[in-house]
Image (cartoon, rainbow, N blue to C red; front, side, top):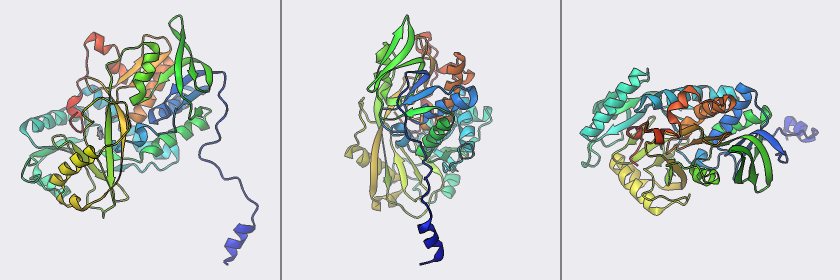
Length: 413
Ligand code: PYC
């Protein structure tokens, strides 16, 4: 046996540093309770502590860290939106993403790939031009490219789409990236904990208590905790939380499914999206194709996955990449998308004093993780909405100031 191994075997055992320390019992009172231990909740806790010195914070998560939409999306990060409000917001998010590995001292495998949104019709081409113009106006690297350019980047793609819906061009967004999604939640969670925030997994909020129109605490399945401020960051569970305060939102919940194939040799560096075919695909560093489609056709609060979805998606995928007919699907899953009528999020204060909302992410929650955490932390710390999220207030639905973001959807909804 090599001497080095023997030395190690004889050594006194050392405590292994754990990524997350053991959880403590719930305290009686917190300054801030965050409902939801996904990326957004953890990011908000992190920035509350790091940028505002607010550390008497508990994040309450009914399942486990990043077990909701954070761990169920297809990891795409981009800022090529249609509205100025969306572009500015997501561009700040993308900039934060670029530095997260350094900030966390944890590799989130942020990988800039370039992002094609294919157009198969004249009207899709028109929308791509529109998006390119808005993007460029805000200094975002987006341009409309022709079929030859796409084919050069993605040589295995059938540009005729089986002769049925030929690709006419695409919006190309060079900064489009992918990242390891659960590592983003873990990095924020560890950073928040190191600064004094408590994270309580398997702790379900069952009610929110108010007195004189003001939040005073939350009831949980582990008892009551007092809180001066409560933030809901629960995506697909938003209606369950807002009902507790009789807050009406226009959010509807639809399952959004995704899947991965067995790994194949690297053949495609870029992310490819086709709104008309309702598919998006990227190749992971392990070689798997990570794929998704539009949301399920009917409203449903469920994370069950279906054969229908895989059949529909693979059918469309074979039009784009004929060789995928030989690939096996290895895993599939679903998340719950919280969709608003104007496809923009709902963020900020509510009519209940001390209660804040971060919701309405549709299929776009992952890429907003850093900026939603940062702007919500600012909003809560100062009790005034951050400039970037002012357009996303809940009151826009009663003031008729919608933010029409549907044209930037990666796939049709
Ligand atoms: O907005 O890029 C996107 C996206 C990809 C998958 C779902 N949404």
